[in-house]
Image (cartoon, rainbow, N blue to C red; front, side, top):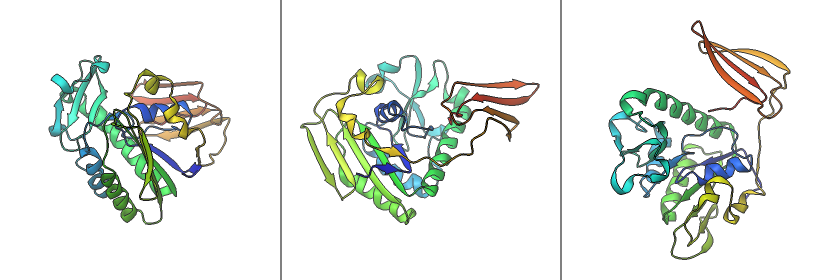
Length: 262
């Protein structure tokens, strides 16, 4: 694996990858699959289509089905839980308790669309890209090889690498497939440390660096945003305080430190 990447992106599977990137300060912004679950290889296969057609069929309201029975995730009892039957992705972190696609679809769709646009821009502006897939199922590497082939076809000047880290496997095993797909299989189940602190299986992230674009440093800056203004102070330090306000129909985003991209 390389030591430096221009983009490190979780493809979902479960929340462990996004959390462990955040734990090591490698997750600087939100991306669309950070908190999405998968229970089969369907979503990985879908990504080939999604990247090719700008995800036009992703998270459509008519394809969202509420989870019940064995599919229901009891670790997220306080959330509304749905599956996108087209892509195969599960959304158990996106709807608050009591929210449904009938009441909150536009809000969630807008957020995911913004993150999809960000992902595509980051790929376009980067060179070396690492995708991480964290799952509780064993993944057929041929499916990931096909995804890599499609991405290489769409973005001919980029270097793509993948890490597939899978739990609940038959054996502990690590190997490299197709030169740039790093497979890590573990017999153990995921536990709370994977989602709240970290575990040794994630140590491969410790020596990885994310290259960030050099931003202009400002002590104080006001910029125009949709329906309002963004006011930032000391944008070159870690985020200290951030708030969004609506006054007389005007939106104000106020931030001390780096603004968090949601």
